[in-house]
Length: 144
View 1 (cartoon, one colour):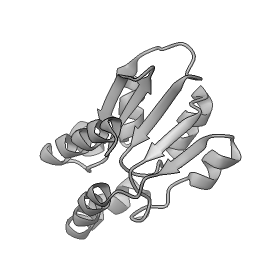
View 2 (cartoon, helix red, strand yellow):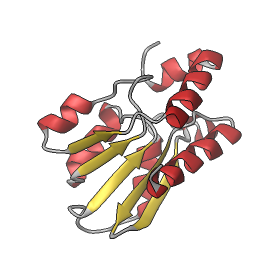
View 3 (spheres, one colour):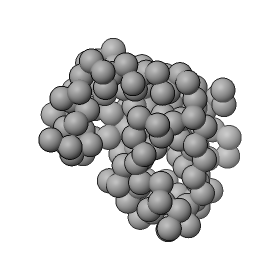
View 4 (tube, one colour):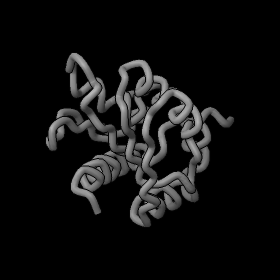
């Protein structure tokens, strides 16, 4: 597994250990992680604190994003894909999209390169969470 996806997966595991939804993300520039985060919606009682948003907040102001890559353990939703497009992040690497198709078409339509690694580790962590916490998952994706 790619070392940056390993970092994102570690963030997802941290979120799960905190009682949250196991999705993690890292922002990479020049072969180095400049931001990391995980879904903190439950922990912070914040409906928009998805992993990718947490990651971007933790990266701080980085100026231009044209030379960055966003890694996420799950295909980004429309909220997070909107942030990717807004900031001009050119590439998203997703751990999987079987549990949630996300906004792949939206990203592609806006010129973002999308790579779906379909990693068993990402799929299994998310599938187990959804099976045990369907109510939180449905809230997270707005499917109430």
